[in-house]
Image (cartoon, rainbow, N blue to C red; front, side, top):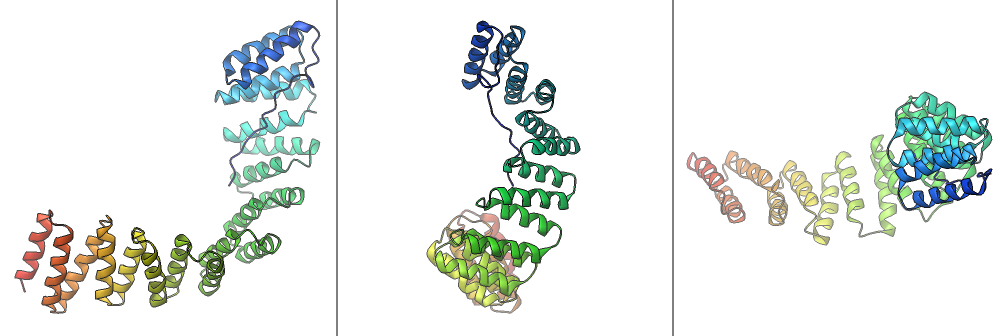
Amino acid sequence: MRKVAFCILILAQVFAFSQTQSADQILNQANSLYNNGRYAQAILLYRKAEERGANPVATSFNTANSLFQLNKFPEAVAAYRKAVNFSNGEFAPALANLAAVLYRIGEYAESIAVYRRALSLDPNNASAWIYLAEAYQKTGDNVGALQALEKARQIDSLDVTLVYQQSEIHIAMDEFEAAVNLVKNGYAKNPEELDFLVYLGDIYRLNKHFPESAAAYREALAVKPSDKELLYKLADCLAEDQKPYLAMDVLNQIVQMDSNFTDAAIFLGNLAFETQWLDRAEAAYLIAGRHGNNEAIYGLQNIVYEYVQKKRIDEAQQTVQKILNLYPKNAELKAEFNSILEGE
């Protein structure tokens, strides 16, 4: 999701219909201070310019922008309201910024109302439609959010992020089919946007449609076969689909590519242990342990306990020795294993 932003627009000549030259000069000096990040000093000069006859829309709006930059949000709201009033409600940027700050301070209902006023003046402002959608979401009005995002997509059909945002709302409403169709259409129009395929896989997996999820991930992997994160997603999907051996093949591929990807090694070890492929589990945990993932020790301990329970003491001893070679300074671990093995 985008962060709600506001329009940084410093008004000078266009709205600065000054009554005197000195007012115009002061306004320009204030703008220079603003552009150099000296917001507190700029505020003083904006107010001085207004006293000298500079256009109050410009001074109020620029003062509000400065207050926003200083994180003085309630004061910024008041200054934006002044700009709106001085313009008789006809200056859309002041309305849009006012709405953004109201959103920032949690006044979502009023933010929505003000965004709608701004959009009645500037209906082609795609960003305002997007921020309106986020305000709607905060109030739980997903239908309003979808309608606002649809407006934004009509204005800016090339903005692929809108597809993701709209899909997220459909998912929140458990409308998975609508989300899938939206992403598929987005991908058809933007085939270079490979992340659409990954996101499609994510949606299918969230809805427990694992074969479709795996197919989407594999289609993306055909283009990016060395994408380890994507391979991990595929392995996770296969594991959820009760296909552990296929998942292990993918995880082994990741580990062969990058043994430092220890999460893949741990996952591989866990799946192998669950299927009682103990030597494979041990090898995976040892790789993870050698590369600094201390979670490996718990997997290796489970293997020792499993061997002991199955009365395979020689194998248990061999695994213990490998663990102690990996963690030679862990006296507590050594004592624990000695106690277990001596009890047999």
